[in-house]
Length: 215
Image (cartoon, rainbow, N blue to C red; front, side):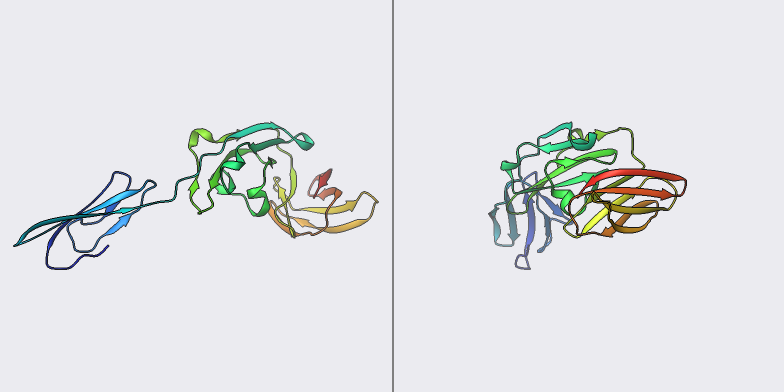
């Protein structure tokens, strides 16, 4: 914010906003808060003192998400936001990191990795409400060695929680091999556009495991 040079100034705001730096200069930066606020300005010179103010409106923060935890498909827990009509969209987080692609905005969310899960609500204007630490949901269950899930129309993720690189094979229910490849430890991003139920076979690296997955 700027004012005419040559005066002594005092800039002030309501409690939710903050003046950054020296509040007595003719130009200041303002950290915008959540609530609407007045910006107050007192100007003084040899002729006296003058006060003014301007009201700045902000878009309201959306309500926080109300999350219900239940047992879902394939024995995995599901987290569902039950007040979706109160805001435009959501973004899921695990251990503070946003979940990628369609997975990050899905409702309900099928949880396949342990961790602390939170969800941020987003209004039509783009205002966000991350909720509070007390709202986080802890998932702690027997962890599978391998997990596979879709993040968007063209991409799936294979999570390898072991320390070894393994071979993977996608097999259709008709017995046709659809794809083969290798998955190193950690997160593996794979281009896969087919949809349906598949058998996913992991081998090598001291493992031999089969999973049924739905994409």
